[in-house]
Image (cartoon, rainbow, N blue to C red):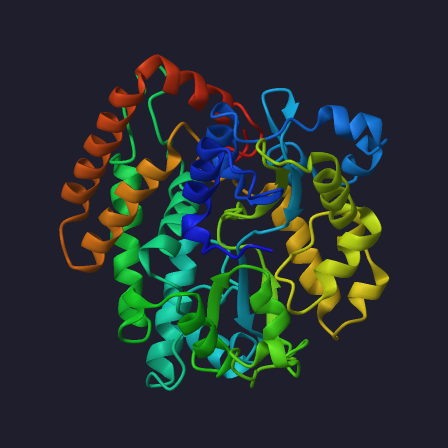
Length: 407
């Protein structure tokens, strides 16, 4: 087992492939990288292995959003979807369900407080109202706003509001449209009702605040829901996770707009340079199988989230804590309507420009000016790659059912 930080995995896989050392056999692949890695011939095509070992029927049982979008490049299988990453909204049922708070909210805003909020306007209203009402004892919401995380949230929100990343005919970036500017502006405005310094928060800081009861709503990956319930936190592997003070008081839903970002995820593949390809294939098939994957997604420390139809309906999983059935229901809803991460040639270059733009947003710069610069950087990357080549990649990605809402 070779451990590599997630941010370095793409580069390490390519470097090893070019060197041809055979150092890697089985690979964890973030699906948005798959096209680049396949075009570089760094991944072993898996169709022959799948047919030889009779595995296609088990692959069909993977939830469609993962099976249809995180397994193939063109018509060729390069990886097995292995982690049902999706953004889920977590909210305090005891706070949002408080009758006095609900009555006061309706008196102020003239509409019933939604539990939970289903659009970003009501989310902002509820968040700021809770912060104001409690005197910041409990903030209405917080997110991880560190740019590597926040760029996923922007990708989701931009599309939920109707944005398109590119003009499909010219491949000019359209991220700086009015929709993009409004999303940037609103994201920064929301921070005012969140804890001070939230702009620098990552996964752990946001988790700690929610588990401590300092925030009433948040959006994150599925592990938050398990840990908020206290599931598995008595194990030594979770010494770094704060103890939950909110077990039994958390509800689960898809985020406002009902089209959550799938946000990274992992697929299992084989290095084209491996000298043990058959053994590596059998290992990833075993890991990914219906029986073993159900065990793995229930391991508190495995950081693998449900991705098969049988995971969402598992009676064993539903018995793990009192609210587990509602948790799995929310994950299944997200796996139905979830949005794919943007995946192009050299996707990392586009994401880096967006991350830098978000850093500037938190620093107080003008949202329109920032996004104009980001769009110009995207256009420059497209020109370097070749407009026609990138247009082909974008057209293929944008044609998928979950690239844009209601595609």
